[in-house]
Structures are given as structure tokens and as C-alpha cells.
Image (cartoon, one colour):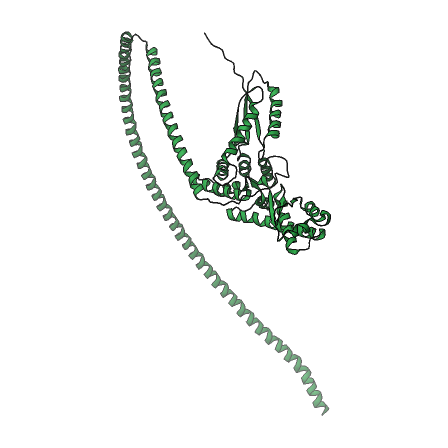
Length: 515
């Protein structure tokens, strides 16, 4: 048994290595066969790749040859086309050269002909000059004048005739223009007057307050006159209580103060309680009421005329003119009428209607405070317009509406005309013709009474007196003193509205005679 096992073990010991050996040999053989196959395949792949590369190379060479052939053909075609185009250009150039040569030949022929004609003309001109000189000499012999003398004589004759004709034509045109201008001016003024109508209420420097009975006079006077003194002190107006039944007269130069006093007194009469404290209260209420009326009247005037953008202070001053009169003519109504007339005239002559209305409405604005500020209402009005940034056209119209300065625009002239129309129309002012002429005559008589005065003229509706002095009797230095003396005498002896400008003129003339 053991022997069998040993035999088996020995067999196994011998068999296992042999089996391993044979297995290794077999694997080597298999590997060698596999490597051989792989190498064979690699050689086949390499051969195939070489054959394919050779094929691709031949194809690439063929394509390159074809492309080169194609490019060669295109280049040859472009070369042929360029050669043909160059040939066409050469033909055109040759044709133009031939044409230029022909034109040059023609020009040379023409120049030759012109040169010949010029030579011929020079000969003819020389002959004409010779003949003209002979004729001039013959004419000079016949007339007895040289050519220069004849030319001067002819020019002088023509000049005299032209001067005469020009003077006649100028005179004719001037007369026609004056005639047409007069007609047109009358038409414009008449049209403006026809399109404007206004009513006025004559006002004076007094106001009358009606009383319910005469017993009210005693209550107004008060104990020991305290009530009447309070009213006069508060309002600045004099109360006149006389024998006039059931009426009290308010007298004062300031129309606004007079209106405040009238309203306050009427309120006191209605209330019945008249004592100093109540008087102060009513006067304060009346002042506020008048201020409101003034503002409303100014705004209403601007709205009525159609003028906008005026400074509120100027609007208030316009409202104050409701209580200002000039010879009974209400200043505010007069300004409204002047604005309308200036607008109508501006429309007729073709200038700015709104600016003309604005200047017409503000032309007398200085009258609203002329009793409070020194100076004429013209200067005061111009200063107010400057202060509140009105245009230069409006300022000049205000300054020039009485001729104090020269008008700088057509609107200023229209405002002058409208102011004259409004003031001079029948019924506008209470001053009669007799009073007006008498005042002008007195003004001239006062100035003529001074020694050295040759002539004097009242102009600008009595607002200026123009005096011509004798130069031998009055020197330049004496004129200053003489003007002051005349102005003082006018102030003392004459009653007049506004101010009067005194203008002295001294003219020296020297004569001599040439013998």
C-alpha cells in the first residue's frame, strides 16, 4: 500500500514537471505562431499603405498638373484680353491724335486769317482816324471852337437842361406827396375818431355829500368841533359846512383823499355814530375800499384796451388816474381813449398796434403822482416807465407826447396825434377857446414886456414859450438870467396846468458886400 502511494507520489513528482515543461513548450510554439502571423499582417499593412500612398501621390501629381494647366490657360486668356484692350486704347489714342492734329491745323488756319483781318482792320482804323481828324479840323474851322471847348459847351447845356427838368420834377413830386400825405393823414385821423367814442363826467376839486337833514351838520361838527377836526386830520380834506341846505362840501387838491373822505363821511352818516374813534375806523375802511377800487380800475383799463404784462405798480397808478382830471377830463378815460386812437392809427399806417396801445395807455401815467413828486407829468411818467422796465419805444412816446423830446419812432408820433385828438375834441375839456387864447396872449404879453425881446411865440398848446432876443441888447450870459426872470414872472402872474418851458434864442448875423 505504502509502495503504491510512494509510486503514485513519485509518478506525480515526475509527471507534474514534465507536464509543466510540455505546457511551456506548447505555449512558446503558440506564441511564436502568433508573432509570425502578426508580423505577416504588419508587412501586409505596410505594403498596402505603401501602395495607397503611391496611388495618392500619383493622383496629387495629376491634380497639380491639371491645376497648373488650368492656371496657364487662364493666364493666357487674360493676357489675350489685356492685349486686345491695349490695342483698342491704342486705336482710340491714334484717332484722338488725328483729331487733335486736324483741330490744330484748323486753328492755325483761323489764326492766320484773323491775323490778316487784324492787319486789315488796323489799316482801316488808321484811315478812319485820319478822316476823323480831318473832319474835326474842318468842324473847328467852321464853328470857331476847339473840340474841348465844344465838349464843355455841350456838357454845360445838357447839365442846365437836366437841372431845370429835375427841379420841375422834384417840385411836382413834392407837391403831390404833400397833397397825398395830407389826405391820408386826414383819412387816418377821421377814421380813428369815428371808431372811438367816449363819455366824460366833469369833475372839480370839490365833492358834495348829501345829508338827510340839517341836524346832521351839528353831529358832524361835534362838541367843540372835535369831529370835524378829526375828519380833516385823518383825510387831509377841508370840510365846508355853510348855508347850503342838507349838504356838506369836501374841498381838497388830492382827489383820492377827497374820495376817501366822501366815502368815510357817507358811511358815518348811514351809521349815525359819529365820534373820533368811529371816524378813524370809517376812514380806514374807506381807504381800503378806495385802494381796492384803484386796483380794479387799473386792471379793468388794461383789460379793456387789451394791453397785458404791465407791472402791477403801473396798473395801480393807472387806477389812481380815475380820480385825476385835467380841465374836467378824466385822466384814466383820456388815457384809454388815447390808447384806442393810437391803436387805430397804428393799424392804418401798419405799425405794431399792441405797442401803440401800450404807449397810449401809459402816456399820462405821471399825472397819477404829479402832485406828490417834483417835476412835470411827462418827466415823472418817463421815470416811472424806466423804473418798471418798459421798452424804450414806450418811454420815448411818454417823453415826446408834448414835444419835450424828439420822437424816435412812428408810434411816438401816433401817440402825440391821439393825445391831441382826445384833448381837443368837442366836449372833452371845459376850457373854452376864449380862455385858451387869452392864456396864450397873456403868456406872450408877459415875455414881450422884457427889454431885449424881439418876438415871442407860445407853442405846444401853451406848454412852451419861444423867445427871440435882440443879439445887440442881450448877451449869452444875460440870457440865463433873463430866462429865470421870465419864468418867475409867469409863475407869479399866470395860472396854468403843468409847467411851461421858456426857450430863448439869440442869433447873430454878419453882412458884407463884394463890390
